[in-house]
Every structure is written in structure tokens, then in C-alpha cells.
Length: 454
Image (cartoon, rainbow, N blue to C red; front, side, top):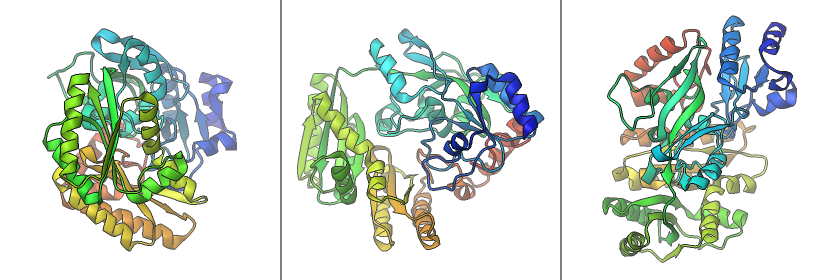
């Protein structure tokens, strides 16, 4: 270890390196239920050259590296699995250039979503991917994050125009360009986004941004059952209404939200909706939506144009996970994260509800149902083997159902440690090709080893 630290000290400033137990402890875990493991050392690069130097030293010293953003991941992506170097990108947080005319922005990976949108707002622009947490854009690209607004604007992979990445051998490449489209070469953007730090470290991202809508309307619609709410979502989508956000929250989760966010929402299955556009278009969208939800037994529907009221509504939705955590001190949260075709969504959520009801847990169901992605939030005691086994079984049943109807084991949280065991079943022979690609880019298995596919 002393050789490793000495080599790092030669290329980094004193403040860019830490071996303290407290700092290592912060980098030993994310927000998942997976057990923490301390890295040997934590480094804080400031530039692409710093990252190159770190990876070159890692190669010389035969140490693995674990890229780290904000630690908000939910499947153990940044947890060290063997001794190694945690690379914290929080100090690479410069917004390099805003290309307003091209609707693009160049940033370093440690820029957070809130930081980026605060700066973009000065130009009448915003970045659309909204996973709830104030994650770094590098981490969001690594896991191919999405969130509440993906039903209209797409997922993280849709926003990445170009990446600057440092490979395991220390070389630097660009994966795309500034052009809106290209038929040249393989799509490396698509390969690296979602690679979860197993192929390279991101040092610069060029992202697509959007004009702030002229008007935004948000609302809540309550239903007699989750099934009624899901059927309404399917009809809204099939009608072609350009809904910007479409979130489902079931009764137990509404109860938790009321307690945590000091709201007084009706404790019924609820859709949180949002529409973006101009005044005339939004009026039509809202009226059409009201007609549709009434057909599915909607008991109450209210819309808000006021910014403060809208923010309060979405704050309650975004804080839902923390509401569950707050209500169960001392326990860890497990969040399932499957995504299914829209045509299978109602059956999938009905199945999920039955699995929860048959389990030993109180579980809330919520999700980005506009694109078929839903979650079960379960609190359990990580020190109780029986509860750990029961939570794992619940997760497995939900995943198996999703795969059986043509879905995926993870819609947005990523694979990390938690979903590795499903990769063979989901991808079949294609998994072997993925392993060949991993071997090609990282022959020594140094980049975030034992994650995603190996």
C-alpha cells in the first residue's frame, strides 16, 4: 500500500488524496442495501490528466479503480469489491461551455443536476433527466439514469452527444461529436453510457438540453385502485397526449409522503402528472386527460400552474424513498426497479402488489409508469438473515415476472452488484459478447471489477 500511496502523492496534491478511515468510509457504500467495503485510498482528480495518471498508477501497482460520483446509486455500483482506489469526481465539477444555439452543454462529470440546471436557466434552457436525487451527470451517464421526465424527453443515453473517456490503459478517446446524427462507425456513446464504470472513466460529457417550456401544468388524479390508475395511463399514452411526467404512487406510499412532506393528499392510488407546452396546447391536453381519467373511475383531479404548488407536489414524489427510510429507523431500503412493455404494465403491477401482500413486509409501489418502469420500496433489517432472504425473494419474484413478459431487470438503477445474477437470463448469448467487449477494453479487469457482467 505504501508504494501505491507514494506513487499517487507524486502526481496529486496533498488535498487530492485521503487514506483517513472516515473518508474511506463515505466511499465504502452507496444508498443501497449492499454491505459496505472500504477502499484503500480515495483520490479527487481535477482534470483528465489527473485521471490518466491515476489509471497509469493503478496499472503499475495492479490495483482496481472504482469511479464515484455522489454515492446516490442503488445497486452497489461504487462499492469496492477488492482493495483499490476510489476515484471521487466531485472536484471535476466545471460547466465547460454552454452551446445555446446548438442546444448542447459541455461539462465535467462531477457537475450535479441541480448545479447544471441553475446555470442553464440563465440561458432559458434546462437538462431533462430527473432521477430525483441530485446526482452527478457522470454517475447518471454511467448507470443510464432516467426518472420522472423520461416519458417525454428520453433517458440519459438519449441526451449524450459525446463523451471524453479515459480507458484502462490511460489513453483518452472521444466517443461522438457535436452533430445531431451520424452514420459513421460504431455507436460508442451507446456502449459507454450504462457501462457503470467497467470500461472507462468519464472526464467530459456533451449533453443535449432543452428550452424551458412556456408553461407547465402539474396535477394529481386519484383512483379507486392501482389497476384503474394504470389503465388510465395506458389510455393517455395511446391517445398521444404529450405528457411530460406520469408517476404512480399507491396508498401506503401516499401515507408515507403525507407524514414526511407535510401534505394532506387523499390516501388513494394517485397519478402525479405534468404537461409542458404553450397555453392553448396545454388547455387541450389537460381537458383530454380529464375525460380519459373519468372513464377509469377517477375520484379527484386537480391541476396546478403556480410554481410553488407544483414544486411542493413533486417534492413529495421525489422524497418518497426518504419518507419510507424515515419511517423505519435502523433499517435499509431495497427498491425493485423493473421495466415492462406498456401493454403488460397493469398485470405487472397487480403481480407486484400480490407479491408484497404475501410477504412479511409493508411495501409501497411507485414508479415512472409512463414508460413502464415501477418500483417496490421495502424496508428490512440487514442484520436479520431471515429478513434479508425474504427481501431477496421478493425482489427475485418481481424481476422474474418482468423478464417473463419481455421486460428488463432494471429500468434505470443499473446492475451493479444487485442485478448481476439476472444478466444471463435477460441477455442469453449476448452476454458472452458483452464479456468479450469488457476483456477488450479492460483486459486486466481493473475498471470497477465484479460489477455488471463479471
